[in-house]
Image (cartoon, rainbow, N blue to C red):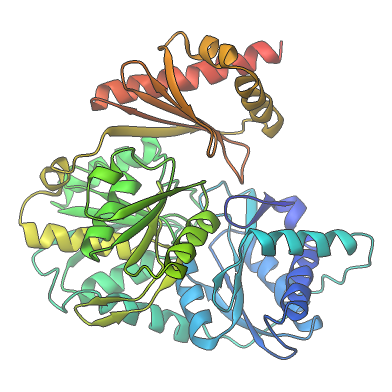
Length: 474
């Protein structure tokens, strides 16, 4: 087990039972030792719809109780809703989710009472788990009081006050429900705001939807539903509801960093924290200061906290997957939007729908006016971690290695190594190679002058990775 870009991840067979009890106990001990909680304090436990999540949640509840904390069961609920409820109760929390990765994998996201744990917390939890490695760990499942309805109601209230009650009247919005824990709440919130809602594609089987690299199968579904039901837009989210998916009236998904940019403008942000993988023209697309970070919500949160410490206000963070965070309070139509420093899918989706309702133009036409480069991203799944590590080590070993690797597609003129290798080619195109931080996947991000060129560059980049891996394994 190890921490990735956001939370602990691993195969279900490795996480179930002892491992989940071990890391939950280590988290509890860290809270108590660091003065972040005291014996008897509440700790929330939420989960997604994966087949393994209820069992892992029960194990975590039992471990928390044996550690002297008061577990509260929040059931199947979006991660941002769990975090919001935790902030209201001043309670730490655990979210059992593997986000967008396949059902044979799962994970645990840990929260302090003030939001996500940071990298120092991860180091301490890992160290405590290491000390406990040889101890006998009791993994007996437990039961806890159910506060699911209360936690959901608080989240609905937060999102319904973002816009006027009739703000979305006249819009027909599809909700791709699949197996996201956000599926029913999206319908509820959109209907409260006046939209005509069409639920789509509900599944009792877990479907891994990656909002950063939307699969061809998902796009085909969206492009079929949009004209069939005469939809103005389609919204959805990943498994735990912290990354949005928004498609236009043609069923074409919008880039996640575009959704973040729309949200920053909607909130009149003054500071934007976003990873290096977000579009390179974000800086020129709004009246704000941009801070670039490594990939992962802990790094975005750290940048937002640093901005607040410097006296900045109106602070927003977002990732290329569209997950949007608020690092300060904002004034919106219904009052004050409380800072929520964790990824959220509802805020960017609602900000985009508000823009659509006000503009009274097709969403595809609205977003075409944003001055962003054409960007695309995809990943090679089931790509061994050791292979991706070897590739990155090879490319970092010398400029000659990097130039030779990319020679089939262009000459290197600049590179950045903030998180993975982001390379600018002589014609201005960009290719960014980065192993996933929480799954056996190799990711590729590209930017080019037009959509066709971006698609071609993405295919070329993935082919180079495949070829290098095949040659290495001969």
